[in-house]
Length: 143
Image (cartoon, rainbow, N blue to C red):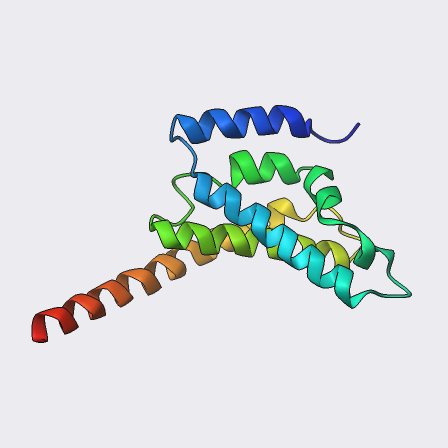
C-alpha cells in the first residue's frame, strides 16, 4: 500500500477546496511543480540513477505526497496570503520534492522538509507581491 491512501487524500482535498478551508491554488501549484520537475528529469535521464526515469504520477502516489499537497501545504497560517503567492509556493513545493527525491535517493520522503522550507519562504513571497503592488499603485497615482 503506502504511507497514505492517495484516493482518500484526493477526496479530502476536494472537500477542503470546496469549503475554502484549503487553497486549490496551492494544491494545483504542487501538482504542476511535481509534473514539471519530473518531466525535466525524465528528459535529462541518467544511466546511474533510476529515479531520473520515475514518471510524475509515481511521485504523486509515493509516500506522503498526496497528504502533504492536500493538507500540510494548504495550511492557511503558514502559507502565503497572496493569491499569486500561493501558486509560486505550491509550484516550488512540487518542484523541490521531486528534486530532493531524484538527486538524493537516500531521502525519498521529502515532502515535510520541503513544506517546512517553503513555510520559511512564504513571508518573502508575500513581501515581494505586496512591494510590487505598492510600487504599481504609486506609479498609477503619479501618472
